[in-house]
Image (cartoon, rainbow, N blue to C red; front, side, top):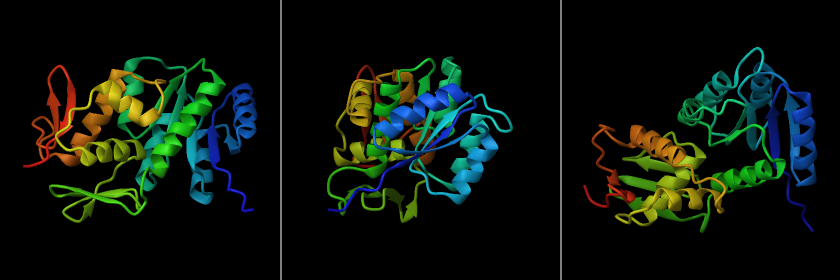
Length: 232
């Protein structure tokens, strides 16, 4: 019997008590963990070691979480989940805008963190037939590569953005509500924050549209949600 390789989670958090709790729950849930207590050490681990997901605190010494996320996104699309005591919407939106896939406010339930990690990893792994290719207009989504191309050029999408865009591409012209988009990401009703969905849509438009303020791909259907326009 072949044993499935454990997913490795990087924990970047300067509070040793929080790290201890996270390590205990994640190891008991079948994950492998590597923990650091500042942003620079986190960056060094990512440069030298394969990790499957990064769990990042914002307020850390040497390099804060926001700067760490920016540095990671210069080189990698590894899934990122933020843990932070900063609960303002502006901080959450900033984190998502610069490349985080999810954002959890402290204090948190370790079981919820574990569930969120599993959800983000499912997005990164994709779903359905791994050899499937989906085409809409000049967009091509290759599920085996977890990549979307426009006119042959790859779009720099995070795992969450990829999941959302493929969902739209598989059903062009269908209107999806924010709640439906959130449910498709999480597989549960853990996070139906409309601001989070709006940030992801905005970020996708920046990467898809010639003019994000006048979108021709991802269209807002007032009072309902969003759709991917099937024809130009």
